[in-house]
Image 1 (cartoon, rainbow, N blue to C red):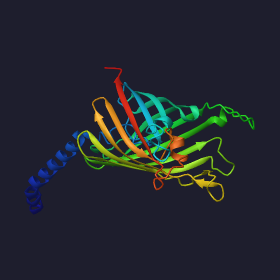
Image 2: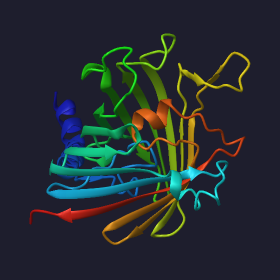
Image 3: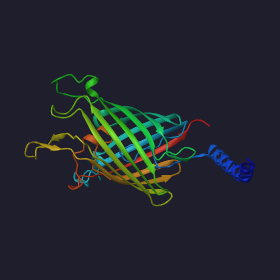
Image 4: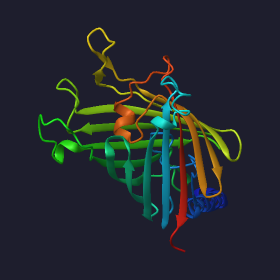
Length: 300
């Protein structure tokens, strides 16, 4: 009995030290801060795809999205493509850090749209370890274009289309970011009876920062079940739409983010850019474009 007591007494200092180390470790975890990733992208859009970024709470953002005419459509005659340009204007506001609401208008198809963007998860390390940021985006589009033909009524429902994106992004280091964007595009009225009303895309995008204010971006949006368009030069009269591929540069200048790029997507609004791109990089059917955004802090 005495022997056991002496052994326990000898081990007591070691047990107390181990207990102190465990308590210190637990207290360190409890007091550890969460370090969130920021500036994964320069702006709220790559080119056509949304990014995981949202303007801060109380911030109003105005964006101009511009696409020049195609290089292959008599570019010089059409005043460097300006005569065939497409423009989209958007205005959005973030009432909280995790929610953004906006409105937009696109000249193509006289389209009006409303959208909501919401943060679900945020990349972080420390007390909370999250390897990626996850953001949702949902939008509805209304085409107000007038039609001369009277084959059927284009009521409100037939003029509507919808886009839903789930942006899964990761900032790997200070220079490189990437994201995967599962996307659903639904159009109530398809162009032909053979076309799918609902199409699925898997958007891919990457960004590499070359200076503190400049970054190179690449974006590709392959459609898994793409439709076709009427093409008189094709053997059967139809050609498949191409996937949108864009390469650009982001320039940050204070409160502005200026994005320059080349893309084969003529459409500016998401449904047209993703699912109605007849242009091909191999055939030189490309468009120079830019996005400009300006933010205004509405609350202090």
